[in-house]
Image (tube, rainbow, N blue to C red; front, side):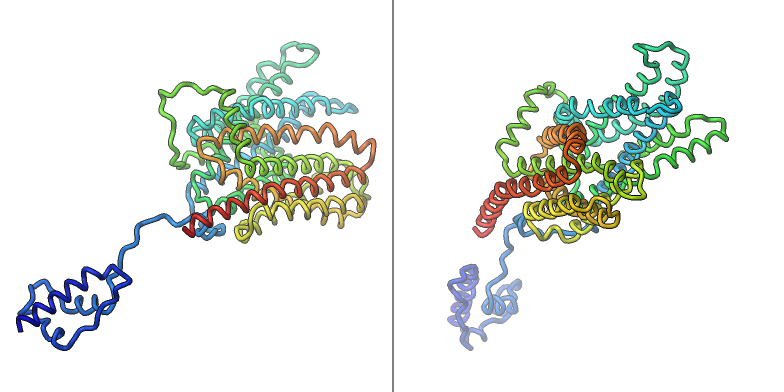
Length: 511
């Protein structure tokens, strides 16, 4: 009996010692060995059931805790994004801030018309001054603002820029009242200089807000949720564009009438300034989890940091390609905004001042495209989406060169322009966010805002002249060619790069 006990124990210990070796399967036991397992012949902590189980199958080994490869993470839709409280705070703040931006321009044009407009004379010169004051900071400070955003708390920038913009708008009535009796400077009233100065400062603060907002999205969401987040972001941006310009004037008029009953004459400013301040208060609930540079770090070298951002783009062709495609896209939309006035003039039954209805169709298309991309766009490579987006964009622009007076067809084609524009803009913005390191996002987004604003300015100068010289058909045909050729060239570069990156990552996962 002792021999059997010894043999059974040896066999048990030997089997347990080899259980991790998959090449040595457990040996079948003899009847004598089975009979030797008893509580009288083995220690109290010996468990025959575990022993029997160990002989039938090797014990389970706990695999090392490794993070799943990024390629294996399934992209998700809108629900996980909307369940993120920080994103909800950022998104809600964006709603009020974007609406305030659009209604601000309506407010400025209304103030110019009421203060300096005279019967029978155009106010285009005054309005152009406001628009220039709003555009100059984007060209001057777009890149510089991104440098500082990288070094500052994104949350602090988002909150402060909204609160300060709100304060500037709210103080405007007081400044105009204090200077109403002042003399003119260079044949222009002092009040107009105040409007220019406030507009310049508001636009300057916007240059800090924009890259901070873009850099915050990747901080609070997983990479697989960026496409859905950017879809919501774009949808909100376009909705604010449509709603802001469409209802800005009546909302300001209602606010002015209501507050006049209380003896206040600054109802319009209260609406715009209040929207900025509400955005800032909402953003106080934002949690970014970002790592800030310690206070002892030396001040930023602005031009060196800008060069760092340019150097990064030089080494990252896929990010550079995404920025080029975004620049082409925004240039086309800026040109469409200029041409919409002429289209409204040619369409029977429309007035040039009703061009906003045409642009609203583009906004509708962008919104639809954003919603669809947010749901199913994660299943397709971003550069393939942008390629087909440019093809569809070019086809729709080509259609606009043929149909110039049929309202229903034109509205449909412009909606298609917006839809395919979303297929370009959203994946490319997601690529820039996902591929740019956290410490460089402010610089890269600052450069992006700078390039895009320059791209928006050029069509304002060139397209109107080109339309006057060559007509709508030639200009729309040229835009269609730019979309198709530009999309094809950038895809030929970025598509190959994307494929190589995916292949390399897949090989690493397989290993």
